[in-house]
Image 1: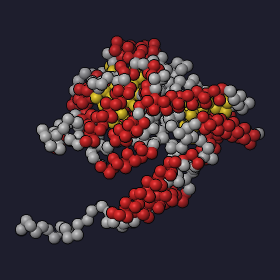
Image 2: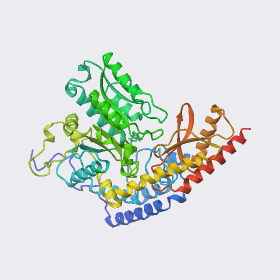
Image 3: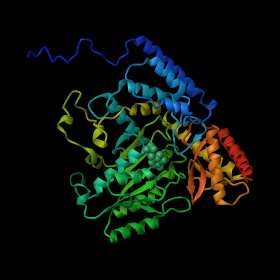
Image 4: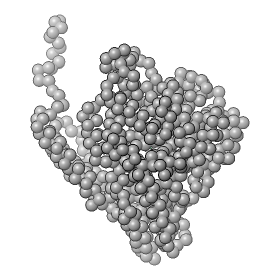
Length: 496
Ligand SMILES: *Cc1c(COP(=O)(O)O)cnc(C)c1O
């Protein structure tokens, strides 16, 4: 057969692509989208925080696979009609649920630019890798972490913890765990963190094949910080019982109450005991950006690995988190693969010094660095420090409002940006109060007033306000307190 005349089922007469047939129309549509989204961000305060999604919308999002094309203008219209009106609400000034960031206008545009360039930031010699390296350098500098450390931008705190704890396990195992696997361990390895440690750390320990029981849960004091003597006793007992303690996880800002462990004491202890010291600083680590708050995080710079988010307290659009590892060789050892198809070249596109795929589980990686690079340049790091301090001051203001309202009761000390409280009215029946406060929260959400979340503290249901929001103002907290009291009293009288 003649090579120039391929099989009959090869069709190259009218080759297709996914590019617009009408670039001008796509350009016009793009301008409209930017126009619409700018107005949407600008007017966010005027809308309810959240609204229940109507059944009709859910139905529209449960249709069979589209086989044939639809016009981009029509698809965009559908987006405007039933997707955009039903957001999570986290860009709203009165969203304080879980620990969720707000996003920014330039961050949104940066995502557009990153998707337009669409590089694969797993490696090779192209500029996105240098942007990521720049952002990682800034991250170390802004947190006071050693500049020789290595790092990686990841999807968020969960992935950052997984990467950090993987490096911890591999480095501390004492054998070639990548080759031999866990079965070759002479003693079961154990991790340590307080009972307030975020669940993503447990997930990581499970994914590492160690089992959740290997994460020892150490009690906390009244400030929700790890109790050091309890940690010491547990580690020493584990050694006696034939376990292999390898890693202490310190919390820089717990998710329940924002508590910060005594990081210096944990660093000293880890050093003395020859343990890896990992810090989960998902949001709390960023408090180091404020000169006034920085002392709270003393010891952060001594972590062997440090996990934190940029999509929470640096207000960048999802997803972006970061992990830093003090010893670059440890970091790379945990993830480097040498496959023929990944061999680096001396020169050309396949060369270059930056192969981020060698520092984490992902090979193909997006250009999340761009939004960080643009955002940090847009505002400068000092402004982030001021905004973080502003959120902490707002938490103190809310604390003051709660403490001065006889109908309310604060449920935990406020160490940073999280305030836990409940409506108490005249009741002292915890079971009653749990159900009343549950109902208050649902009504706050359903009426679109505000979106705190909740937690359970010593068995009691608490409204939980976590402030990582650059749009919140003092009056938003005043409104919250007024509404909680009003709703509480309504529900109380309905139940009489
Ligand atoms: C949010 C959070 C995480 C998880 O981070 P994601 O970005 O949601 O993956 C881990 N630890 C703490 C303390 C957190 O607040």
